[in-house]
Amino acid sequence: MNWEAISAIGQIVGAIGVVVSLIYVATEVRNSARATQLASRRSISEIFTLLSRQLAEHPDLRELYYRGLHDFESLEGTDLVGFAQVMLQLFRAYEEAYYGHLEGDVDPRLWRGWEAAMRDINGYPGVQAYWRSRSHWYSEEFAKYINQLQQTAKPPRLYREPIGDE
Image 1 (cartoon, one colour):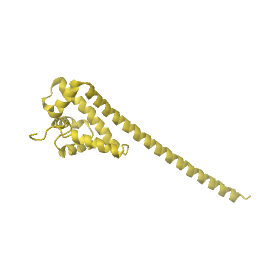
Image 2 (cartoon, rainbow, N blue to C red):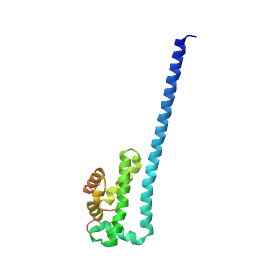
Image 3 (cartoon, one colour):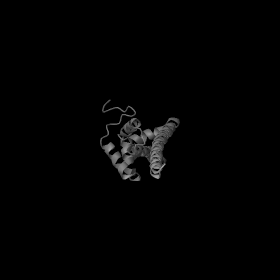
Image 4 (cartoon, one colour):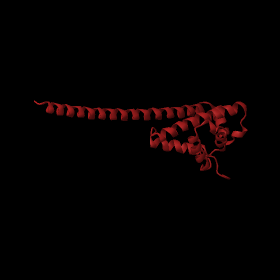
């Protein structure tokens, strides 16, 4: 056997090894991306679930939330603090979902639901008033997105509020 043939066989084996390694790395990257998507989805869902559970289990918080949705300006003292904290949790969850969507970590089917919920909640005058007072707490890009949602928001109907003279 001559050295040129041995060298050629070595190069072929090396090339095959590189291809196999690249396939392995690509598979691992894909699996990691799926795991990241799942973790992001669960994190956001847990935040919404916690907030929903708090509202369901605490009538006083539910009443405060409902009042705040309609009239943020009338809230004072501990009511203002309580409603602002609920909105902070809600908008942080929306912000996480927003960036997850932009980065491809949030399934588009889930994003449509979260975006619809954001659009609905941003139709309330109390939410808009809260946002005007606290939007500087969020990233500039997300703030622009919420501002756009609020400008195009329809009259609130999330909790079957009457339209006009109904």
